[in-house]
Amino acid sequence: MLKDIDTFKDLNKNDLIYILKKEASKICIMDIMKASIFLNEDAKYVQGSYKEEYLKSYNEAFITRLKVLKDDRKDYTDQLDCDELQEAVKLLNEQEAQVEAGEGFDPGFFKIYKLMSIYTTFILEEAVHPPGTPFPGGFKVKYENGVYLCPVKENQKDNPGAVCGFCIAEQDESLL
Image (cartoon, rainbow, N blue to C red; front, side, top):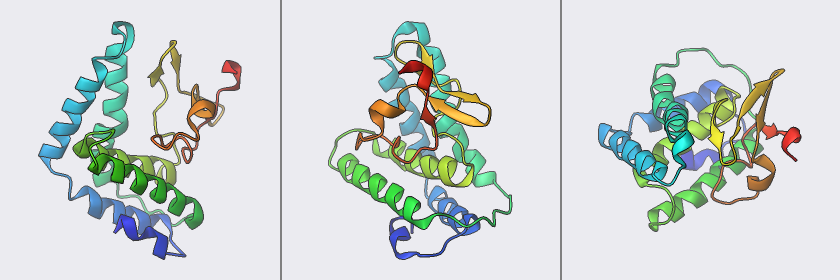
């Protein structure tokens, strides 16, 4: 159903969360286990000084939020910008094709990554990576004065393998 978003012209958040929950119900414990293994394997390349912080943040952003999505009972009546949503889904579908070809993320992790990226951006209106998420150089995502600030947004916004292009975080200008 998520792949069909480009056929919708008028969606509100309740419509989208219904679709996301249907997709989330297809994620099984094996997908979650594979995603956790993928994150741990991926973290072996992270410097020891922030490896624990990295794992905590990525587990929070993706694995833990899956339960948050499934348990979300709020009434979201706000309309969505369907053009922005369609662009995000298009990018994620392109990334999914790469995953299916054996490139990039583990397929189990990608299922979760895709849903959480859309959920946090379009439903929660939060940055995909939560505040405190570490990046190389000791930089972190911040939340200041109602704005999410990302240390890598500018460098990654055109990266076809990242979700930075539609994430609501702004570039942390103090790092430019």
